[in-house]
Amino acid sequence: MEKVIRVIARENFALELWFDTGDHRRFDARPYLTRGVFIQLQDAALFNQAYVDLDTVCWPGDLDIAPETLFDRSSPINETANAAN
Image 1 (cartoon, one colour):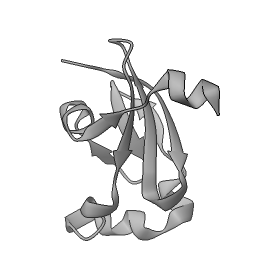
Image 2: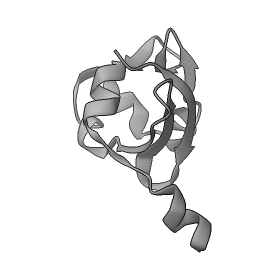
Image 3: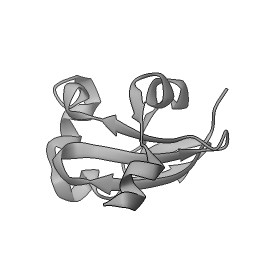
Image 4: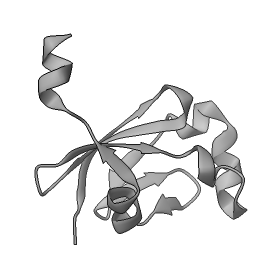
């Protein structure tokens, strides 16, 4: 199973993620913000407090998303394209 090793909260409720596999990916959290406990993350100030703990992304208040969900439902970030811009 992939483990999250770094996270940066980005605009529009996106997470930029780095995994122990070397993958660099972008996760759109917006579809989750209307579900259960994740409604709290509609507060951008709270969303931006994302941090890595227990191999996944967590937020204050015992909120987290499983690392396999983050990996499976994220898209790769093309490092080459980003470097060219």
